[in-house]
Length: 186
Image (cartoon, rainbow, N blue to C red):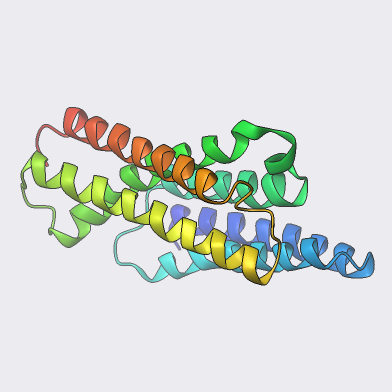
């Protein structure tokens, strides 16, 4: 088994155990909002295990970046209430996610293009579009989560949604420009 796959398994396992412990803790405390968020944490911590089945291993930095986002959004943001305590927390995570997805898009782009030389403009458009689309899907997730579970993700309704979309799209733009500058030749 490759080192990258072992690292992926370790991170996923540690995070699943962490969120499972929180799930049990909040079930016993009868805190329905937090146990539901913890259950979601178990799920998103298990998802990266699917990457093991890829022929090309996912870059370690992206795996670490993913779990950093999971920790900051689910544990710090929702469970420890950073979203409520710090007005800037949500916007910062949307900016981070925009950058993260834009950078991860390079890996996806290379896999699907067969590693052959492609235009930097095409790389920019792909990374920007994928990242901006992820911001839209994240807002749909927040809306659905508020309707079904927590009622805390879209604090300010339309204003919060627009700020989040602007932050995510700004992150997409930053990543797209970075990708053009970094990858002169693919």
